[in-house]
Length: 544
Image (cartoon, rainbow, N blue to C red; front, side, top):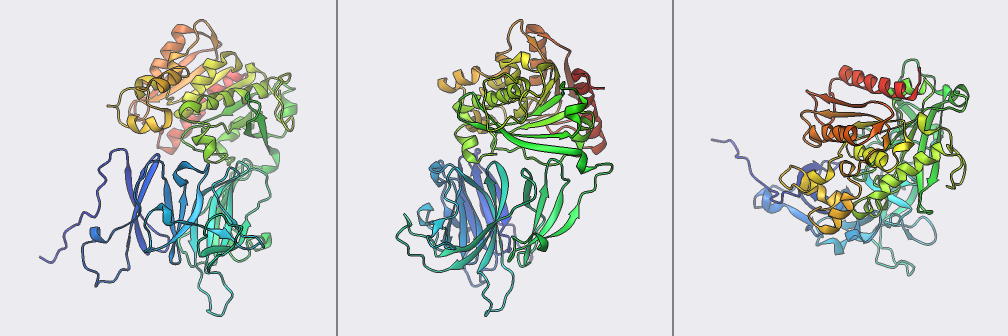
């Protein structure tokens, strides 16, 4: 029998960790990633290793740094180095960029800062500070003649700055850095030139597109905005600043859509703490502000959990609302990742979770109350509507946001759309036998501990419905086969609202007997569900 037997090379035995495998972009190394919410451990094996090496594949696995509580990291291969993106044991607000030679890994103490030497005084490019966050690194190594003055490699770095997704293109070289101004020893792998990609619009969504070949001289970038349909753009690595050198490879065509008829704004609203600036994105049909004679219907969307960002991206499904004069608002509240990891880790989870709900309500008050004492750098969006014309929406953890917000300010909204809402927080989180519960403790806290129990009870939507208060009309949806938010959570919340409160309109429950957490997978059924929800919103807002 010449058949080779399958070999178990690694097994993850800790139930709080997930395990996945991937290849480096150049396909040289296989990487095993063991990750929990607050800890990571990576192993790798050289797929082009010599056949003379003795031992099984399991014995050839190399650990980059063993798991340590609070240490999270990931790696990208760059020439003979690992570029490490790490949270430094939680000691920096965002991820920093470090490097270590492949084959010389010991632990996180062997990682050295990657510095930028293009200016007279070298400085750390991504130091994990508040202003700039780091999300990922992709390495390109186009072929070149030995006599060319070409960089060792190019890095396309994705991250965030000023609350917006950003892309930087870096050129790398190798050589010792000895500078007295640097606080720590720097990695020999360093940046010789850097460029942040700029685009025509002030608020947008961008990222790495469908790149499959690390030897190409250009990177494919995806780009869209609130008013610009998605496109893929080829940007030369050696000359990324030149707009003329960029090539649009493909742009989505939206039938019947005229970009010139629509506008968008990006502004901030100061939160009730008097310090935090909450980013807000707004898209509208340009004649909405005159067509409605100051009585503008507004729909506000929020999420604010797990460090997930709501991007200022294009959605053709918004057009039925926009064309009827509805202004669509995205509230980038704390708990998301719009302003980097601190926006989530320090201000939007555990005992800071109420910031998420407070931010959402503060944005809604800004939109509805022109006489409010809130201040901002400008008056964009202030008082454009009133509570009788304001609706809100959130799904899953965003449904918890909506539930907590209407409990806090039930008179602020005319209608609320809660999709598969996580509203029975306490009953779910206190039962460790439910799948995912123990993992979720690292997001909300463990209610079996008194400090978390009391805090979570103070905002749990199910426990805080106000007796006798007038609530907005609600459409609450659920899926019978939802493993994340069981169908009884939206059913219980609907029943509680009907029992305890009065309402400006119906409190509706719609349970899909075939769907799970992510609603319909069938495209036409999804559009039908979207039409149903929009019909509800338009009726409640009095829009024909």
